[in-house]
Length: 362
Image (cartoon, rainbow, N blue to C red; front, side):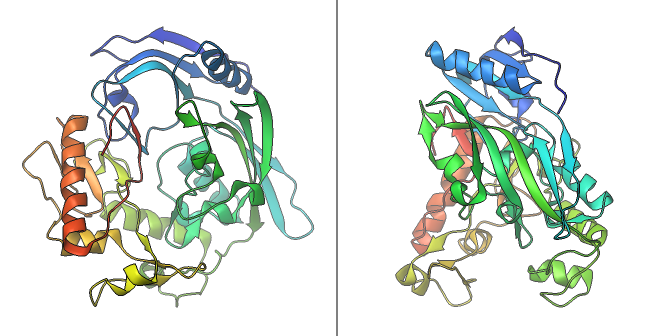
């Protein structure tokens, strides 16, 4: 990848452009003391390593789509990842293609590119906001696909050992909405800063097996069947728009961090305690996953719960907590606590937030 720009810096001023509300999809959060914008990999490494060497708190920020920042903001340096680039290796003998993608590349732009070029493997992950580098951290998934299925390697900056480290898929310890990149910590943040992700995709006009029942119905195929990748992308975008999960500045249902709670994964006793009718999806390790949205709805929280307040559940989907235009982080947190506590009282299940919480606790 050709990179020519270095990091640029601005001092944070409360109430002005460096309010983190301006940099996150929830549109809440106080100011950053300093903002660095790194548009080259070496500048990104230098920005983070300089902060670490000085003992300066650092927050690495991609698209801001999976982040809830407290109203006091971040008393340190925010490093925005602005690297760009997609390098394509020639198709291999097994009918695949390898893509090396800069961490700052917008994720949905990448998915659109793969579909347009006739490459299959991430088409069901269309419409997800944020940057490519963020996707392996929490093993982004939707509509029956997880990014772990196509990640070959991730090139990172190891903040602890102060060196570049490339990890293979097997080293990343992918799980449900988690990975080694998310779990290993250093000075209060992730140990590894993602620099570049390499994906291995199939050269094919048809998708892989469509596993998600709602998507299969929309496409008119049986579960496990295949469909043109372009049709899968359009179907997923349509489904996500109907749930307020495609960013739209004019639609407050999209002023969110996407799904706020992960689907609970329960042991056998916890799954047995669920009421009849609760979704149950067996996991490879013997545990059972259930639906956070089902639990929220059956605990008495309907779509739009919280209106006409500044924060509410989406009017389209109960799993999204939304900013109705004037919310502060405190409003979103209060709603999240109400929902979490209500589900725990009703079902004995404690919901876990999916967004990263910075300068605040649930």
